[in-house]
Length: 302
Image (tube, rainbow, N blue to C red; front, side, top):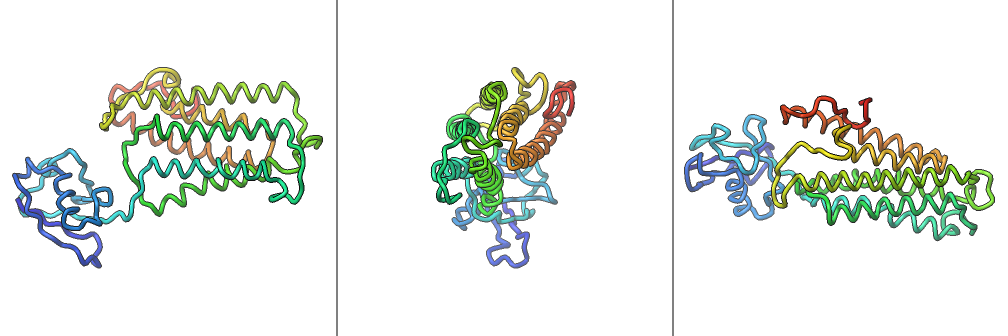
């Protein structure tokens, strides 16, 4: 069959083109079309392509007949631009704080113009942050399975700013400063408060990891199968991983009593709640038997 590929932009010099594809519309899959385009223009690899019919995106695994396409019909092509894998994006995002915090913590003279002894609060906070992002890097490599392989490369800078600036430079600079050093009044914390924050942090981090492992086990390798998540945490909310991460950063925020930690906490929780609501609505729309008693992110609340 013949399929006409028209450009979304009138400025395109490569399109329109006509592809001669083997088989009927019921035989030709979306990925066959994408591979044919990539063969003709290697720089337009599959992950850069978005094919649509009347604003409906064509999905891999489906045939052209699934979209009502016939011999001689046309689809619209959009170049999504250079792509980067989500796994690489996460490694870059979480790597920022893992570089910034040690620099600020171990080189105080470079950032504050003086040397000083860190307080217990500063040391505990440092290891909380480092272990959190080391755990995230580990999960990125060994735990997470990504339903979407890539994202536009230009977005990596916007995505990284949240971690590199807010939980990186902003948090590190204001928490590890001399005003919170050993002997400073601002650094005084009761043993009960410190150990309470440590206990909450450990509980939250382990619980967060458990929910990530649960989500990973829902999807067999190399598939995009979606199931209703169940088990620890999921009996309360659709996104317990976000809820438990909220508790982790609450521990950091309470321990430091720093406006920079409070700011990151508010921004991070607000963003996670937006994601949680979107996922919650997606689950309820996709699964007719989805548990109605679940909230999006906060048990019994929302």
